Length: 220
Image (cartoon, rainbow, N blue to C red):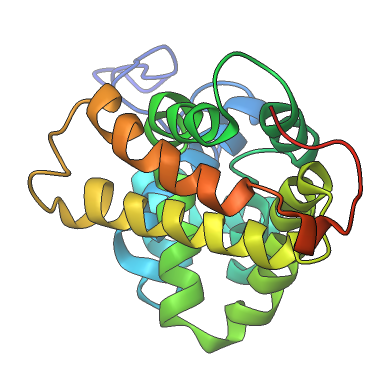
């Protein structure tokens, strides 16, 4: 080592000490940092407003590493767009449990999905509304999973229509409460919202003889 030059190999203040394009830590940690940064930026700026370079900067990695893991922005976006709820869980939620199905659904979304998956849901909505290129893939994702999961529990001829209407109400609730912050909805308690929204959802989930055509079974 040259006299007078400080050896920085063990200096934690230099995050690129392990080589170009990598942050201090494991490869898995770098990938997770990229995904976390992408979720936040896609949710805040949308698909078009987010760049690979901005994601790399937010994650603290070289942009080459982002391309190494995900190749393109479109592939990275498809990776971070995770389903808010799996179809089987939605079917189970509507088919059984305490209380009415509308109350169960509203409470689950408000207590779990909205707070836990806020960035992912926001990113999906921004992409679907703001970027036409993303719309077909997102539509297929919603129709084949979330709508199918709810429709399976409803068991009526117009089950998919009812499931989509219920989903539209939940999307509207998310936008008003979590993104725009419309009052008093934004600060209303979960119990307040469930008390009003639950019966409205149950009206969609109810199965009349006309739609069921004498079919047995249903939600309880």
